[in-house]
Length: 137
Image (cartoon, rainbow, N blue to C red; front, side):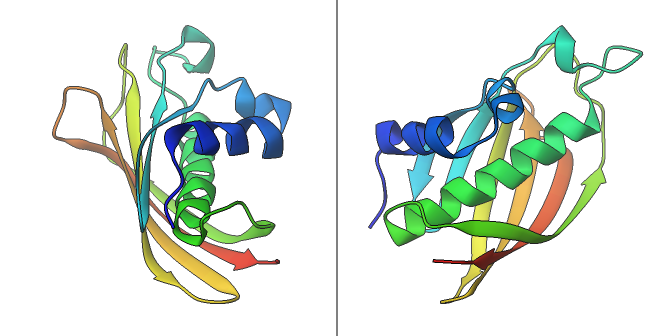
């Protein structure tokens, strides 16, 4: 029961804090067990030296997991992050980031995902994350 892109973008608008919405994330692709979000480049999200901040990437990975779980379940359900681990492999400068969350296990009460983040136009991974979510509804 995959969502369509408009439904997924509505989940973003309706269920995330204003500061997350300020990241400018948009859903660009959905599947039964995955979601791809775009994190647009912004100098406001850059740290000293001009690379995209790790905090922005981590928030994008966390958000992509919610959209992937929602796509797999066919609708948003209340959930909360239990664990997130992120490894940064290369800096992103002056490029949007594609954030792909793939569910590795979706149970009744827990969801697990692997997330890859790549600068648009690059095949090299900028960061990886893994998340665990508790499903509350």
